[in-house]
Image (cartoon, rainbow, N blue to C red; front, side, top):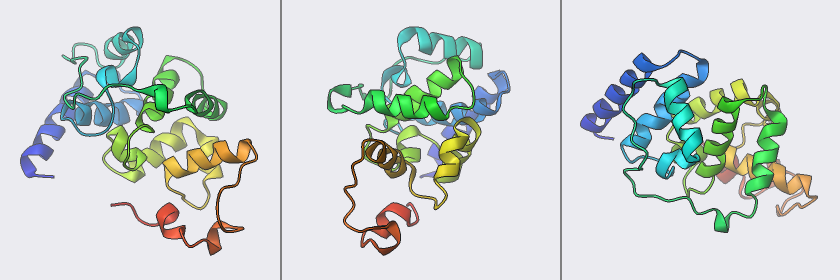
Length: 189
């Protein structure tokens, strides 16, 4: 990323934090929104939220911040190819440490980002995989605990869905002996 892009991100991130109500999730939401405003990530218009959810997020988390509803990237939500949308939402709700609007926004953002083709943290617009791990640990602690071997998050979520259905599509009897181990557990770039 060029220094001018990073400056743009940092400026919007700081402006968002200055308007925020100061919850732990505001840090991650500010990263996501700053990236989204720069056209980074896979989130579509309104971050993938319904209009009322988007308006509530703006007014409750970042009051006074001028947040446009359209994605600079021009991406649109297309859940027609995501048959597992409800299953992903249910999985995240089961592991949420609390209920409420903020949790529902995060669930929607995570599920929508799963439509992207990069790593989940990149599709979400977070600035590192560690930030995604921190967000999940804070909001979905059961999932963080279950991912004890630090599998990449998108792969891990889908693996959870497959195991819940009794589907085991891996070629090896365990991850440790699988030829694709590096694709699931290796470093992300």
